[in-house]
Length: 260
Image 1 (spheres, rainbow, N blue to C red):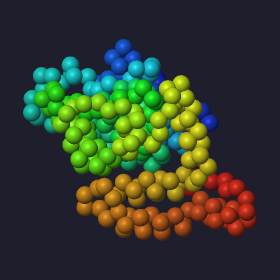
Image 2: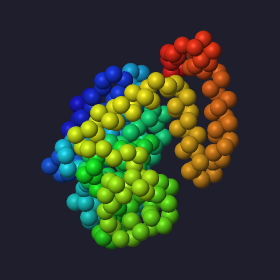
Image 3: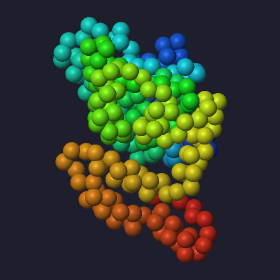
Image 4: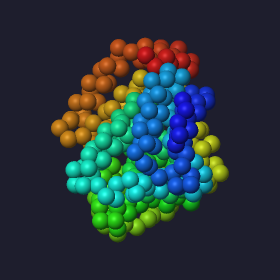
């Protein structure tokens, strides 16, 4: 896969996507959003890949926001369309992937950058990371799911404060708020994230995909998360992974999952 703004690598079952616009602090533009969609879709459909890591190029930024120059002159209709297309193409798409996506936040994650990180299934931050949703300082609100996912992760009150003040929080604050799972030195970020990915890969890909679906269901309007859990729990009994997992347990050996 050859992209202009995105790098993709696959090694030992881990697919890594790196946003590669360091001169722009990896800011998201329309072209990069499309490339990210294509990259994620490709890794999702690649049987070799079990876990996906998303990060930014360089030491300064994961994604420092959206490319404001692209939409500064938009009309009301164009603005709404920008948000709708972006959410469908990338942010909702990433959240609903059946393969685990880990955000390795290696610096500034602001605006659309934080929204992209929050679309990942969980996040690990470097100790120099700064996160925030500064959109109201530009006379607009977060449009790629920030007003929805941030309260889910940190609670309504903290989310309201972060959005209204347009301020940044440190990696340690993000950890205390529950926005990231771990904070590590920047030089160790990718290795640490890969180690967690390796732990995930010991388990059933089929079960993990079903668990992702069940967890996300709890946050979707009109969907009963408990019913989704019951339905997917039942489906597991018809998979090869279930037969292998239970047989390996009873035989006191390590399971070898096929993902089927």
